[in-house]
Amino acid sequence: MQPAVHVGPEPDRAIEEAVSTAGGRIAPLEQADAVVWLDSSPDSFPDPLPERVKWVQLPSAGVEPWLERIDGSRLWTSAAGAYGRPVAEHALALMLAGGRRIADCARAQRWTEPPVVPLHRSTVAIVGAGGIGRALIELLEPFGVDVLAVTRRGTGGTLPADRLGEVLPAAHHIVIAAPATAATRHLIGAAELEAMRADAWLVNVARGALVDTDALVAALAGGAIAGAALDVTDPEPLPDEHPLWREPRALITPHVANPVATLSRYLAEHVRANVARFGAGEALLAPIDPDAGY
Amino acid sequence: MQPAVHVGPEPDRAIEEAVSTAGGRIAPLEQADAVVWLDSSPDSFPDPLPERVKWVQLPSAGVEPWLERIDGSRLWTSAAGAYGRPVAEHALALMLAGGRRIADCARAQRWTEPPVVPLHRSTVAIVGAGGIGRALIELLEPFGVDVLAVTRRGTGGTLPADRLGEVLPAAHHIVIAAPATAATRHLIGAAELEAMRADAWLVNVARGALVDTDALVAALAGGAIAGAALDVTDPEPLPDEHPLWREPRALITPHVANPVATLSRYLAEHVRANVARFGAGEALLAPIDPDAGY
Image (cartoon, rainbow over all chains, first blue to last red; front, side, top):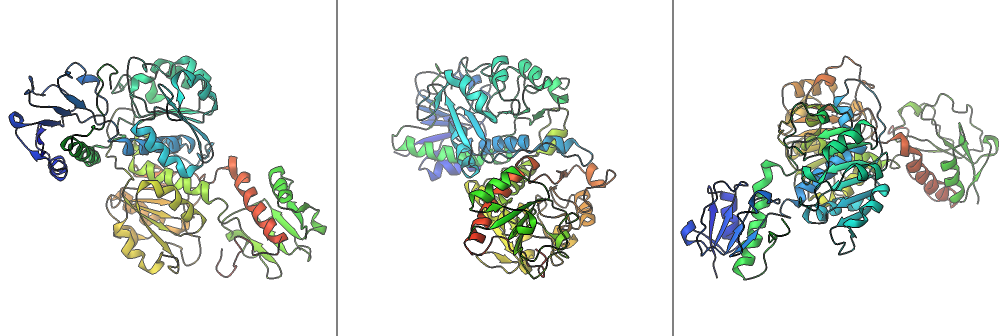
């Protein structure tokens, strides 16, 4: 079948091309079998949605603001996995910035040698083995690092989340790439920071709430770990007067791991794959489980 | 044969272990067939060297200060290639820091979004395809980038140096990883900077003199390129009052691509390989050609 797909709230050439390439046709909302929604906020989302819409594709990997809108009368998919590549690249940039002391160097106004360590042959813990984690493992392949992947249930050769305490003291880098749920809130708190090596770097490219910010501020101030490189914060945006802005062991990037400039390029690939699967009656990528919260 | 190897000016456990592992034995200078010298300056080097010494291993990749000491009565080898891995890692850290605007973020005291671009699927020019260039190509493999490698003679699938002008306008990143010689001095000058894309990043992990610093200062101030990330400078160390320290498009790391902390680990691997080759009468790694200057 050729699915009729509505793209909203505004037309988007890259996404519409992806729909067509995958065998779909662009349709107005009232004739649509599926909706690809490009606004990450649900505010302008059609309410009610026509009954004939059997599938909604959302534009973000995290769907916290959507959980109340997601109904059981159709399939909803997120963009989880779509941005794994660019976000994993940012995670690697932050890991290298940590060990290579790029933030210290960027702030220095004179030639002073910081204590640089290579990533090569170190131990890297990756918490969450979804699209970001898998893409990061690929990027790390030539570095000869030991990867310790931690997932909720510990399937597929990963360690279960309840063994995180064993992983933390071994890792030079701890990368947070797990979804934000009630169960992962403050996954990294005072005890976890305490368990880390004194030369460890914490990298968060997931959601701010996975890390207990107050505990992190204290750990950094006390030199409990080498540093934290965060693309996401809690609160976010981080207020101007927040102590992390003045903490020399902290590096903050303002939620840019998935750059705006290439967002539609990666989303278009995801939409193309899902429209083709929808047309063929196959299982879609990144179905949302509202009970799990992602 | 079991070569007698002198390690100086001071004993070094990691290097001496490497000599033994490779089948050599540690010997005083007057009984030595070979010398592994760990001081990168020639000031304390034995003069004259006993005639029975048939091979000298130096500790640095660049050997400019040694060129007057290198004689034709024995073989001299540098550590070229030994540090390819850690230096290539630093080059990647600087490339990612460029596109991901890590320096801007490190300097920011508030949440302001910089224009981030992924490295994924971009075009990378690597000038010099020795140990650093080859290791960098390995690290870049999972990024799906187009690599344009430039070498002096353009052998082995690389482009010759006289076609650099064609490469520059195509590259998002230009990485300098070539030896410093009379021929490569100011390889990147005003004309080359002018030929680069306005969104290009220049990365130098080789030697400062390969880039015309004054031309670079002007190019950065005028916004001719996106930025420069330099581990090496000319002059080096960069004086406190140098304009590059205040240039927002510049990121300076103080010649730390090959970290002190892991220097002897990588040098030991190189020494082990060369002692084994010397004992077996095979060609050594990184022979110095005093006429070429490296």
